[in-house]
Image (cartoon, rainbow, N blue to C red; front, side, top):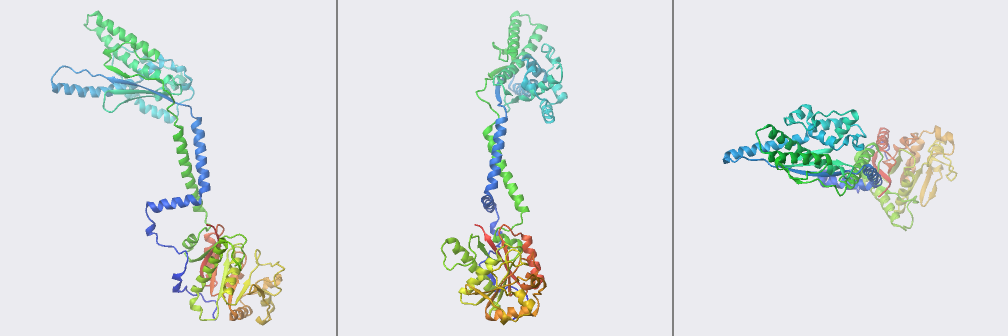
Amino acid sequence: MMFNRPRPIDVTSRLWRVNETQSDVAGDGPIALLRALIGLGTRHKIPLSVCCGGGLLVAALYAHSLPPTYQATATLLLEPRQSAVSGGEAGVQQILDLNRADSELQTIRSERLLSAVFESLNLQDDAELGRQQPSLIGRLVNGFQLGGPGEADSARVDRSQPLEGSADIELANEADRAAFSNFTSRLKARRVGQSFVIEIEYSSSDPKLPARVANATVSGYIYQTVAFKEQIARAGTEALQGRLDSLAQQVDAAREAMHEGALPAIATPDADARIIGAALPPLGPSAPRKSLIIALGGVVGLLLGFGVVVIQMALDRRIRSAKELARETEILCLGSIPDVPGVEGVPWRITSPQEQKFVSAIRDVRTSVEIACTSLRNEKSIVIAVVGWTPGAGVSTLCTSLSQIISRSGRQVTLFKAADGDNIRVLDDNLPAVSLAGAAFAGLMPEQLSFEYVGGVAVLPIHSRDANANLFTDFRNPHVRRIFEAARSRGDVLLDLPALRHSMDALALASYADAVLIVARAGKTTIEEVSESVQLLRRAGANVVGTVLNRARG
């Protein structure tokens, strides 16, 4: 019989039914990641559901707070005129017309034309455009859209006759400037692919205004083009009055249409453009897309929930599974005891599946300890110590259950039991008067001790009712060693040790054990507490063979 000699775990421990960490080679890849995410979502379904629901609620409130936006689009087809020359020259003319399409697009986007439309429709007093000043980002975006002052000037067409003073428009104050800036940011002019088709689109919360603005922009472009040709015709050598009258009618029709926010009432063949699609009042709002916003809100809430769970898991060091206990502490986990309310030991008659799981887990722990101590079984019996870092880990329940399992297998068992809660002061009147601390303090011999037999197990308290005996007893003295040797000569010995955090008596008593088990309570004990317990016990000369997870869920 040898005490205070740590021994390596026997080779046969590889046969244990334990939660030993396996290689992660087979767990790599997207399938493993998907399984991990599903498992994470299943374990933390409540916070994820709360975050996802919160995201949906916030997105729904935001979507319903946004004003509806209506859009209308007018379509314009440029008609390049080709001269009746040879095929090669016609090809050159076509390329020049394609380049001209980009120039005409810049003309539509120019401040000259847009300011004329803005003034014609009297939009400077529109509440929607003037109710807020554009932000810094809006001004930057608007600057890029307009191409800056230099590009805007270069984009203007050099025509000798301005649009009735619209080129020299000066906004009266900052409110007018803000309204015009908002107006230009809502109007979009784009070319459809590499074709001659130009789409002019306007967005507004007024369902009637987008069509008026889009049509007025088209009419303004036509008015500008025809007015330029009329001026050339008047200043040139054309003498036919009919030609002048035709151009004058087209100019008047385009001007009137621009002011009314409509299209010219007559055909405008001299505009070098043909209207192929008038802007119509929208039937419903095109923005905001509430269903998309709500869906994105749910996705963002779910991702936020995963982020919160990951951060919580990174900061939460509490042990929740046997695999995590074995992986983080690098110590074998000998078993996982399920949480069965009301069970304080091994019942004589199993009446529920929960009790059956509990008894099976206790039996597995006992088998693991037996395999770990196989090389010591040539002696008569072994000493097993069970300890936790804090009270409430379930050390007493595990010791009681192990002693009952061993006793019912035909072996005699002696249990040295610590008090629950405060391990220094013993206040339980049901405990025997004699204790291990009292016997060591009084110098009693092993044969002078009287054990209390509970279910066939000999039980002796570790601490005494006498506070002096608890304070001044040295558990490393020869009296304690002789008591353990006497108990070991009769059968196996289990030590229900006090919590390491509150008493160093556990270190002194653990050195007498052949195998020491550290109990961690699921969801309560942290990884650092288990690691510190292992270090303290090994420094004291205890042989820590493994850990046990108690009150595990799932």
